[in-house]
Length: 270
Image 1 (cartoon, rainbow, N blue to C red):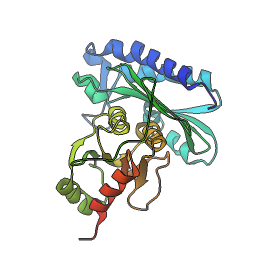
Image 2: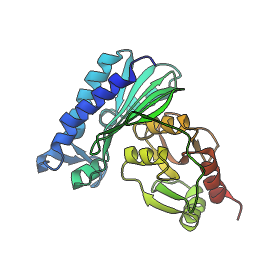
Image 3: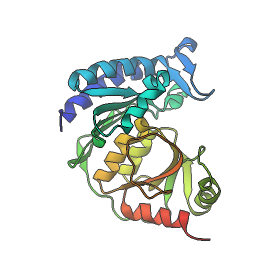
C-alpha cells in the first residue's frame, strides 16, 4: 500500500480513544446537535474527531484529499469529487453510530478508507467500545484484532441479515421489501461499522441498503470483497463503487453464495 496500514490504524485508534471514548456517557446538552432530522445527531465528539483525523491522515498521505461525513454536511459538493476518474481521497466517518453514542448504547466506531483513482485501496474499521480494529488492504486480505480472516464457510440454517431500506425508491420498494420480510429475518442497521464487522465474521449473512453514503460503506465493502464476498446493486447488476447513491438497492454479503441466494429470493418472478 502507499502508506503503512498499521500506522494508519494506530492514528485512528488513538484519536477515537481521545476524542470519542473519553466523551461516552459524559455528553452535556450543549455537546449534542441535530442535522437532517431529530434523530440525526452530531456531537462534539464527531466534530473534534473529524478535525483530528483530517490533520493526522493528511500528514500521513498529503496527496489525498479529505472527505469526511461532517465536512460534507458543511459542503455537499465535496462528495461529488469521488465521481472523478483520478485522484486520491481519504473517506472518513469519525463517529459511525452517533445515535447509539448519544443514547448510551455501546455500538459505535470510526470508519476510514483510502481511494486512489477510483479503486478502494485500504479500509479501517475501529469498534470503539471493544477496542477492536479491522484492516483491509487491496489484494492483501483482512485482519481483525491482528488475525487474518479467511473465506467464510457455507451458510447453514435460516439467513439473518440487516436492513436499511427506508429510502428505497420504486419499483424496488414495492417488490423487494415485501419479499425481504417474507423470506428473511432482518434487523435495522444502527451502526455500519458493527454491521460490516459482523458480516466479515459470518455473524450475519447479508445486508440490504437503500441510501449509500461512501463513508459508511467503502471500507466495509473492501473487507467483504477481500474475503470473496460481494457488493452489487440489484437494479443494474453493477458492483459497488465509492459513490453516493439514494434509493437504489445495494445488496452486500460475505460470500457469493450468500449474495446469490438472497438475490434470487428477492428478485425471482412472482
